[in-house]
Every structure is written in structure tokens, then in C-alpha cells.
Image: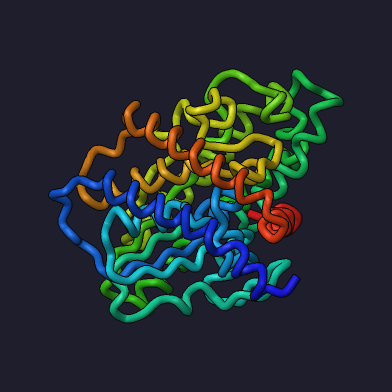
Length: 343
């Protein structure tokens, strides 16, 4: 099917999602909040682009951006006058300055979106560098069957007493620091915000039907996530950027949490919710809220009322996605998103 026909068939569904987001996000922002920023650029990987979170932004299918990802929600809450979202599934730090190939086309370097007068830049990057995220989600579930109570994943990635994933994350911190420098060179007026990664695994307990890791590897996955966020935080400190901690505030909202509380999708792809091992709408809303609060000096905590509202919104978006899914063109789009999915 031609892209033009696909765009025409899907645009009404995407517009509904975008309109729902804008009205909700603006209603959620306090009426007294000042307009601090006017020209906002969002950079990042799929934890920013939000693959399969209803509804897809059909103008960026190759990058798997959602019309309800956290950058779009944040832009609405801040009421910026100019907004550019170039986050892209599968991106790593090299794609800030180099083109990125996707199953549905090649996208320019994300830094191309920066301008001298850009005054806010959010960045969610690092999990894909040196293949860390893909290594752990692609390897560890397959090791559970042979040793369900042990820690075969940790053993696999420990070579001669060295945690190879931790070593890669140390290298990633230096790369993210350079990203901050590159942003400041191109947009010297901008407030640069490095957004951390929310929890996938719980601090305690297991849920193998959702996260198919060996019992002993839950602690290992948790430690890898901790180290990744420490790398992002360290890069922010080294480069003079703002760090938004989403790891701590997402406690109780990991993939093992009950439906309605979980921010992260488990092992199964859900075409109406999120890509596997990625944030659901609730997670995107949570990150948007935490970033907004950080920028406006509000305590970065999540209230029960906020979580309830996001759960309600997520269910409504899934309902709309289910209705639109019956349209052949939209169904084809979702299938393309699923088969071309990447972080």
C-alpha cells in the first residue's frame, strides 16, 4: 500500500489521540505555571519515541514515535510555541550526529533538529549503546529454562570476573557526556535535560510469566538498570545538564506491577499498549510528569490521583486503537510497527 494512502487512512485516528493528549496534558498543568520555555527539541531512543503506545505518529513510522509519547505530553504541559520531536526507536548516541537506518527508511542525525535559539532539549539515550539493552533482553530469557532458580544471565555476562555489561555502561557515560557537549555547542541557550530510564524489574520479587528471567537474575537486571541510570546522571553532572530521575519514582510501577500500576510492558508485544520491555502510556505520562515537575521546581513524586488518571487515559486510548485497528490500513500500520520494532 502506498504511504500516501496509509497516511490518509490513519490520520483521523492519530488526530484523535493527539487531541486527547493535548487537552489532557494542558489540563494537568497548573494554571499558574509560567511559560518558561518556547522552543523545545526532543532527542532520544525508543523509551522516548514510545513504540506501539496508542496512537502511532504516522509521519515517523520508521522511528516508531507515538502521538502520546512523553516529549509530546511535556510540550503540551509547558505550552511551548515550537516543538520538534526526533526521538527514534533503535537510536544510540552515534545517531545524534550520524543518520539512522530503520526498516522504513533512513532518518537524519538527531542533532539536525537543534537551532541556536532552541531553549529546551530533552534527551533519553544510552540504553542501546554497545547493545546493552538488546543483549540483556535478547539473551537472558532464553537462559531461564536451564536454571530457573539461579543467575545464568549474570554468569553469562561475567567474563574473568568482570561484568561486561557494566563495563559497556561505563563507556556509555562518556558518550552521553559528549552528547551534552554537542547540544550546548549547537544550542548554547538551551536547558539540556537528560531523562533516566524507569524500572523494568522490581527491587524484590519475581514474575516469570511477565519477565521470563531466572529468579537470581532479577537482581542482576535491576543492577544493570541502576548502573545505566548512574551513567546518565554522571553525564548530566559532568556536562552541566539537568538529570530527571525516573528510576526511583517508578518504584512499584515496574513490569511486575499489577495492570493499572505497571509503567512497563512485559515480554509480550501488545499492539494496543506498547512494545515488549518498553513503557506503556502510563510510563510515558509518568516521565512527562516527572520532567515537568523537575523543570518547574515541583517535588518529583507521583500521586495516586495522577496514576489513576493515566490508567483511565491509557484504557481509553487502547479502546480507540482497537476500533481503528479494524481498518485494514491501520492494521497494516500496526503490523509494520510490530515487525520493524526496535528500541
